[in-house]
Image (cartoon, rainbow, N blue to C red; front, side, top):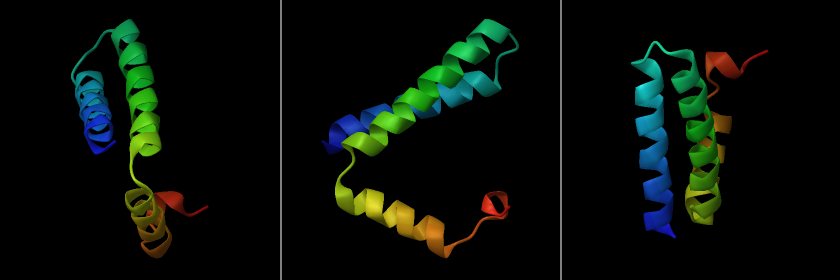
Length: 68
């Protein structure tokens, strides 16, 4: 499951890179959709220990963007 998660994470990072470096609207919409789907799939395929580590780290380190 870790190779599947890593592959999905790499695809999402490539989609985010393409989103940041293009000016066409259709390409931006498609790459944003691909990035969101792949990020979700990387969390689904990741082992529970990694998901738990990410959730706990988000709860401990309160980023300014998460404050309301």
